[in-house]
Image (cartoon, helix red, strand yellow):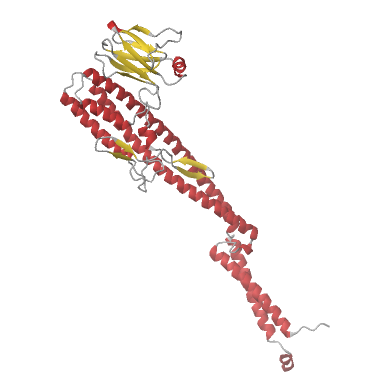
Length: 413
């Protein structure tokens, strides 16, 4: 016969109640917090999943924040460039208006004054800042002002040529701005391929008008050996010949020297380059043709300043028109620079929008997965809480009955 001691009975009852109290406390914590896993020991595998999902959601939140910041910067840049485009169009209209021999000196000065205002407004736009007050067009430089307008009217770039980026995914970056050097400073001169300009020492009425590459293959062949640096020299009665930088005759594709006779309004073809002219050249007048990309760049502020200076110089109509034609070409190249940047910004904004939508969808998926792993089934937890509470009360009542029993109670009975 096995004899069960009273102390053992007490200890077993106590252990049972303590275990039930612990389970009841855990369930109460689950119901009050809504979490199934409070500490890693509750479910080691589930706790590891919670940590992993938490890191993923934190990364996505940071990437989404980066996207919002990049969106703000790019939208600000796009708005600024819209205004720049409007200013360039106004300057172009004023330049075309100024190519009018009937304008008085006062009229020209009035146009110059408007161009000064346009230049100053463009400097202000080029110094646009982001939401944090950083210069938007300064590249990665921390300067507070990307451009400085000097007393002489010239403009200095204070930034660098680097492009700033925002991390929008693991190993994925999107440029959140563009350096001002690429937009405003490094603007191709002429038509983008070459510059054709009348010599300042010309004495005739020859004006160099529109010019372009009429034959890409001929122009490529002529440029293959290096930058083109040719000169069209006029003789009597419009005759002309083309020579290179060393004074040697320039030959056409057939190997014949390029010569001819020019008449008012003609275009002269030089190995794929077409140059339209008007007026009558004097003997000895020259037109240069250069394609050196290292030299053929001109910032948009200099273009505006050249127009302003020409209008204020009192130059002859021929000299003024030659200058304005070249500057209008440069303005067109500046517009192309801005347009190219705007198209790029649009593509980046579209990419950011798609990425943001993707993160929003992924967050829903990951939050659902996290909820499945971490959150408690409230109906089950409440049911368990009720059952555990009832069981604990029953254990306590049984213990109260048992602990009152003893041999003396039995004898007295």
